[in-house]
Image (cartoon, rainbow, N blue to C red):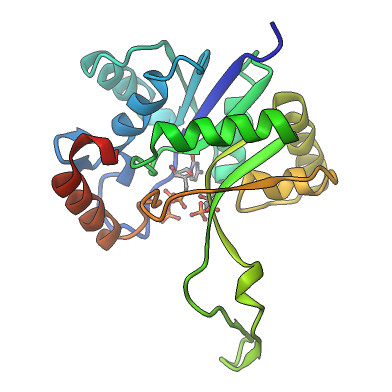
Length: 232
Ligand SMILES: Nc1ccn([C@@H]2O[C@H](COP(=O)(O)OP(=O)(O)OP(=O)(O)O)[C@@H](O)[C@H]2O)c(=O)n1
Ligand SMILES: C[C@](O)(CO)[C@H](O)COP(=O)(O)O
């Protein structure tokens, strides 16, 4: 057996852009904490063999309690994260024994199993994958004085999401190198790209949003209300 799949759900951020006293991953989306929706999707998938959730050290116990209360259908190991997303992912990885790892943001609760499957199949075929959507707006590069310095060709621009899927050995190597070199990236793929490993983009969904600011939560509420459970 060399295709075991592990999932790391990162939920150790503060959610400062949400502006609530409670960390955003614990806010309710309809009737449940946001991160519970995310865990439910992965826990229900037969392809997933191991699950690790990373949260703040002070939140480990209450997350374990929520996981029991909502009867998440798989064992989820809850571990403490670090000060940056990258540190949290790295800590999560050290608890996996799987061959493949999918890293997913706990605050992307509208992820659909079909997209997870597609990311996994693509990674197993090509070596590494990330979910992404083509950008819809024109994107400008702007300098410190607010002056436009470049307009990249939109046809080559994608907005990157999670899941991001890799061989566990590759991702560990990428994280070790970044750690040794003091490199801090904003997603997992950046670290793997630095190893020279090609990462394939999988067409994601515009609804697989990262709940970051209050209007994202309003949008997610609306979609769940109008489209029912299948949206999440
Ligand atoms: N030290 C951190 C920072 C972020 N994350 C997680 O990474 C995901 C994406 O990060 P982001 O949306 O930026 O979350 P926050 O850092 O919480 O938000 P903010 O930047 O507004 O504080 C979230 O699920 C978040 O909980 C994490 O596990 N550990
Ligand atoms: C990983 C990610 O969700 C891909 O879009 C994103 O880069 C996380 O960034 P953030 O700065 O933690 O919001």
